[in-house]
Image (cartoon, rainbow, N blue to C red):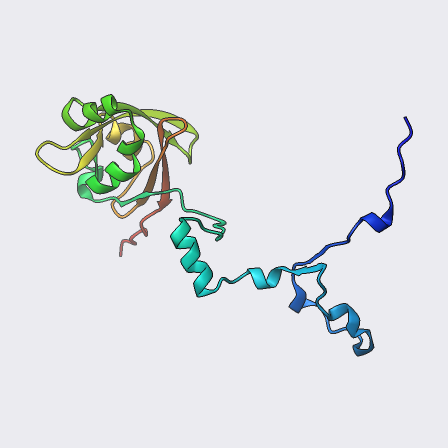
Amino acid sequence: MDMAPISASNKTLVTLDLFPYDKPHDDPEDASDNKQTEENINLASLRFTTDQEQREEVHHNVSTKTTLYTDPWTIKKELTKSSIGYLNYLYLNGSIVRSDILRYLPISDQRVVEEGPGLAVNVYDEDTDTMHKLVLKKWPKCLSYILGSAWRREFVVRRDLKIGDVVGIYWDPYESKLHFCVLSRSPIKELI
């Protein structure tokens, strides 16, 4: 099957000038290359939006802003004496648990957390690539939640957690599990 050659006259060349102002200063006699043409799209002008464009985005509930990185650790907790003590649970802020974990659970699982004995959840330790089981439940007569059952053995002792360490936790709605990471260690106090 023979194909007709593509005619160059039917094509329009469009160039994208990603960094038009970052070009080295060329020979002033060759100023024709530095001029903006209709076919040349200047992406530098797309870096910023006007107030009107921002209002339109808000009105239409859209955004053209790109987020390159979002911190996944939605729950950050500096460990206290009660977090690593013999109470065997990690105390979590109620509003954060409701917004970052419970809303992803089925209604029946939410009831087990809120009113029942608690929900067994998988907790993946990012640092050691290990999986653990803890129980998420609402603390009685309080607006807070706890991660309990084996908290002390599986995390405090195994990871040698100390007062002042900061841990991060987030719920993975696709795999229905918590992710855990030690974000920072408390400074070591020197004995004098």
